[in-house]
View 1 (cartoon, one colour):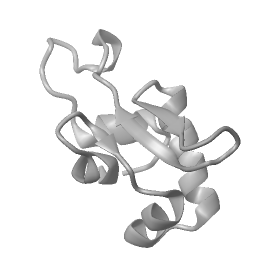
View 2 (cartoon, rainbow, N blue to C red; view 1 turned 180 degrees about the vertical axis):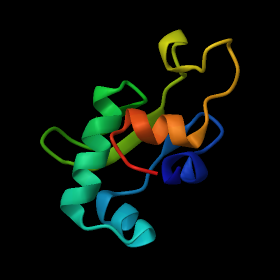
View 3 (cartoon, rainbow, N blue to C red; view 1 turned 90 degrees about the horizontal axis):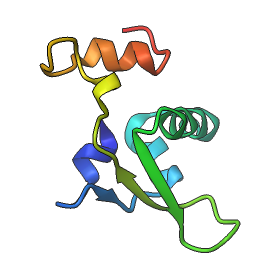
Length: 88
């Protein structure tokens, strides 16, 4: 949710991992795991500032047909959290 709120009109967020952790009250390892899961689910793309750096631009990606609710309606937050492996 933070990436969506911090994103510009093209869906790009420039928040670093430390800032994300501070805003969410999460440790750096938890932020890293959450971002890795978002990448795995192809919900975001990441482009580092330079090769080897963990921070850079985070781009929200459009939801595919497989991630939308049955019937083409909106996906609930509970469904998204379940896909991320987070209990709601």
